[in-house]
Image (cartoon, rainbow, N blue to C red; front, side):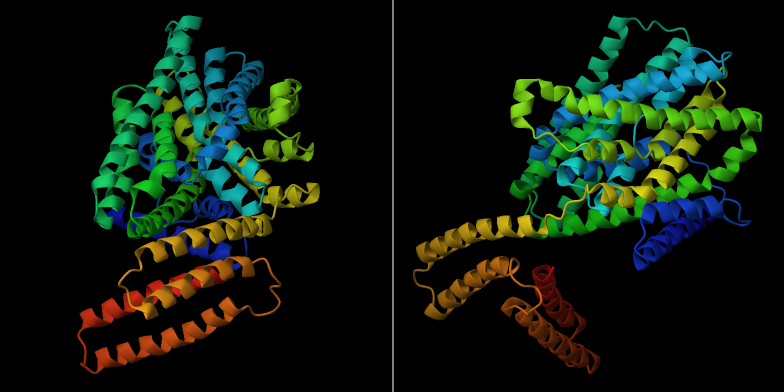
Amino acid sequence: MEAIVDTVVLVTISVLGAALARRFGLIAPLVLLVAGLGLSFVPGVPEVHLEPELVLLGILPPLLYVAALRTSLPAFKDALRPILLLAVGLVVVSAFAVGAVVHLLLPEVPFAACLALGAVVAPPDAVSATAVARRVGLPRRVVTILDGESLLNDASALVLLRISVGALLGSAVGFWDIAGQVVLKAGGGLLIGLLAAMGAAWLHRRIEDPLLDDALSVLAPFVVVIVAERLHTSSVVAVVVAGLYLGHRIPYLLSATSRLQMEAVWRLLTFLLEGVVFLLVGLQLRELVAGLETPPATTAAVTGAVFATVVVVRFAWMYPATYLARLVPRVRAREQRPAPAVPAIVAWAGMRGVVTLAAALTLTEYENLPGELFVFVAFAVIVLTLLVHGTTLPWLSRRLGVVEDTSAQDALAEAGVQHAASRAALTALEDNAGGAPPAVVDRLRALTDSRANVAWERLGNQAQETPSAAYGRLRREMIAAERHVFKVARNEGRIPEEVLTRAQRELDLEESQLTRSDD
């Protein structure tokens, strides 16, 4: 009973914090992180111990999966080179740099243990990147690179963490051992993700009930993770690959009802999980401070050095990785040379998150590691990168001019494709209109013309009310009147509840379409 109450309290606080952030135009994860930090010292607030398995196997899979579902596969493939340079190259360099700095400050700690801490703090977090980068309004390619990096870097960091822990325990870590582990983890995860995605696609094609489609979609990331972990491969790679594949294929696999319902389900789940995750991170502060036995000066020195190292190394890596590759003629011909401000923004967007904390908590299992110190350092890096980078990233992106408003371009592209789609719809109407009442055909033709006109109207002067906007405003008033009549009839007993529910659903669907046109 107590666990249920604590869970309800945490979810309630996260919802209220998110509502507060939206009310004042703040970034919800940062608000919830600060709230957790403050609440951790409030008497009576439940003391929640974050279990690594809960994060890595319970919270991370659905968040990674839905992030991959929403990632454009063509854009991901187009940005694969910078994504891999960040997700693999930068993780390795950052881990070794942090390991060297920590070993210099704590020479009594084996280098393999310091490297383990480096692997823990090296990868930026998928949840943090998605939550902050999209809110800032960064260019679409920059968001794709940050999303792709955060989707894949956990896998390389966790492999490096296992290698460093193995070296600490005396296991062989020669070149071929490392190469074998990488192939087994990454290659196995890739294969499992593809097989799972193809299996889920086969089931989606044959499922006609939207509820079953939703259930399958929610279960998919957990099944993939369990299978990958059982086979000792990278569960992160498996989930990401499955999400990318299915996200690209969803328009061909699901009915319209299933897609709408699934989008609503995932929006709710990610909203709750992201809120609880950042709140939980903040709530760890009291327990971590209480468990520290290292002198404050040493703790501050190691924390400051690690934070500075991950920031400096990321900046030092970004510019060579961005511009040296463009010395290759094929790369130079395919990709535009970005302005110097773009690598700076990507470097500044390296927020860490809950995966770093979960990985750090696994280090407390080994006796010859300063586990409490390393966990606190990892926690401090999360808080500092989120608060320092997360709060200043919007200002910095505007200051450097690295913001992109694609609404006009998107509207123009949509209008062009909608024109072609309307012509195809009219052709289909003419081919299949035989025997249909002329009034029905005229109504469908007018509806098609209206959809094409709405797309072009978005390019016009928004100061004046367009015909479609006037239609939406008036139709909403009419729907409200219809809905009121049905509710009065239900209250007076002239229709049963089922009739009201059915009529209200039809009116709600139409009103939601009007809202989409307004947006």
